[in-house]
Image (tube, rainbow, N blue to C red; front, top):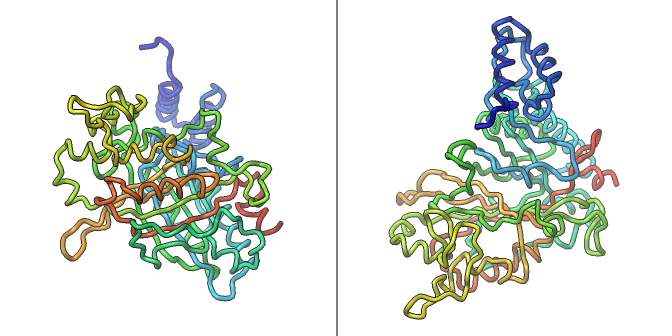
Amino acid sequence: MSDQTTPEALNAETAETAAREGVSRRRLLGTAGATGLVLGAAGGATGYAAAPSTAAAPLTSLGSGRAMFHGKHQPGITDPMQACGHLVAFDLTAGAGRKEAAALLRRWSDTARRLMAGEPAGTRDTDVARDSGPSSLTITFGFGYSFFGRTGLDGQRPVALDPLPDFSSDHLDRNRSNGDLWVQIGADDSLVAFHALRAIQRDAGAAARVRWQMNGFNRSPGATARPMTARNLMGQVDGTRNPKPSEADFDQRIFVPDQPGRNERAWMANGSYAVVRRIRMLLDDWEKLSLKGQEDVIGRRKSDGAPLSGGGETTEMDLEKTDKAGNLVVPINAHARITRPDQNGGAAMVRRPFSYHDGFDTDGVPDAGLLFICWQADPLRGFVPVQRKLDRGDALSQFIRHEASGLFAVPGGAAEGEYVGQRLLEG
């Protein structure tokens, strides 16, 4: 171990001393700030605003994590996956138009900014998350295809937001698909996530009503001995080949450029497009497969996510390798083979899903699977070509069912003093 004292250890020591001496929380934060510590990104460790505490015990690292609301891009796209999530779509109510939508986005943006900083939602705060820190809360807003007609902004609707084509694997419930407005909420604490959901729903007021809501979860940060790629409800390591912000062409693939082309709209600069799919996993059928059968379907080892052609999780897959009998080691219809960008004209997207479990059907079949969320600069060059290829012969398709779908334009982040979507609604 290093002989240097870590910021986390020094922070804990400072807080313990302050608690013994009866120093106020405000004083504690001032002292810690003077030593140059970063407490959950400048204020995240202050916890939920409340009466002054005489025993200023520090928040755990889980609660102190803070994402920033203002920025070039909206939060919840490149941030690490959180433990809890809510996806909710709204439709504008009869008579609500551009003016009401602008007022709603202004309210939502102010609430998101407050909650992501670990502050109360406003004067009507419910105190559900009173004792919690920001817990890496992110709140993300998007516009559906129908939003533009309802607000008289058809001329500002991007071509990339055209409805997704039909796929053979679709069994879509139209009542749980699409919507005028979409909100993604993620946090590392379930009460913080729920508190944000209720605040957003209340803020909708008479302007919009909930169309559908879905709730999800992931493994909690720190639940494993070392950082590792998440697993889905099939037990598979999921997300190995996600593009990374460190890659040179990441922004080009995931975000709309600052100077959009003729088929794009200026208000979408630095934004992205979210494809949302509720994918039921037919777990009873999946779990009947042998381990080898499951690995052949995916094309990767279940234990560590490594390709069946050998190596570790991040080893490049050898698509031509054969066994002693001359059979391809990675089957021709393996999911990991079909979804590779180099097998789809370079199509790439950031997958940032949540798992879900909504109980059981009347016949006892689990209603569980993946709330699939993927981000890309253009769905026609990201999600669509990959899904079309999967439709033509993916081994995984017999074990999943796409039950709901949505496509949303997610504008760039709001600058200080702005609200999300302001360039669209006031441009």
